[in-house]
Image (tube, rainbow, N blue to C red; front, side, top):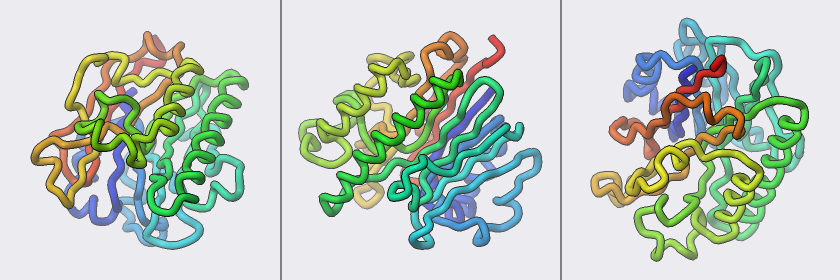
Length: 258
């Protein structure tokens, strides 16, 4: 099973750049998009229903052109959750959980946390609610694959300029400590597991400063999996050479029958 994950920073503009065609050319079994910035009724038929896929969307209830996630899959799930189940956290269109026979795929666009102090508090509350949701799924007997823009660089190796960003949202100790908690629960950061010493591997770059040209980036997009699934991983990639957004796509290949 091939899964592609990409923060597209606006699905309509991203598609016009040919990026949707690139994803389809890779023939993924599932692909997960974040920051779609669109309600389904704003999308064309080719984006809503590409041949061979069923699609699911969550969008911001509060305003248009903000946040949003989508999942496209060749195999329809048995069940879908569009929310964490916490009303105050479920208004921004950040979450989709697809239940298959043995595992749950979660696509999530975590809050950035920048700006007003209450946004960081919101982000931390979202982190806690998300982990609680994932753990509840595991207790029901499901394995977990979760992916998306987590909006935090975990360790110094995951950011080009760690010292300069120690006090910046996205690299704060309290945010990084949450990733530590996720890992302490047994979830595996797939890319870092297989590439423990690989530096300069990033998934987001600031476009205003042309940071991508110099590879001054952050690794903030992830695949995490339950530990039982680790022996089933075939490949994990960061497609840093693929453009279309301020993020690049990441890819997980896993043999769930193995």
